[in-house]
Length: 114
Image (cartoon, rainbow, N blue to C red; front, top):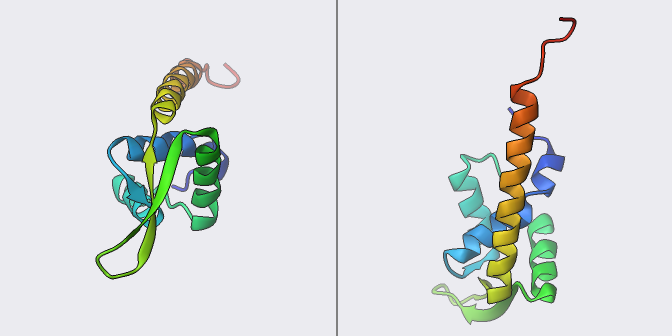
């Protein structure tokens, strides 16, 4: 079953910050890790990921730097900042409250016509 993209849009920042909490990563690494952990449910495109990362960088939630990879290519790595950790905590609490309330509604919904 495909997940509605609008549901993904509200959780992408939370997912990205959660990955970066574990350590610095470059863009493709984040895309691959999200896909792997979600059994390919979350398949971000670069055109979705990089604007989010740039916005988080502008907010001070992440910092980036360039480093040469083992293959000789230069990669841009991202790491979470203290502000990013605070934002992650806030987003995690919001997500927990949201899912609790959605589950309360859908779990107790009465059958139609009853």
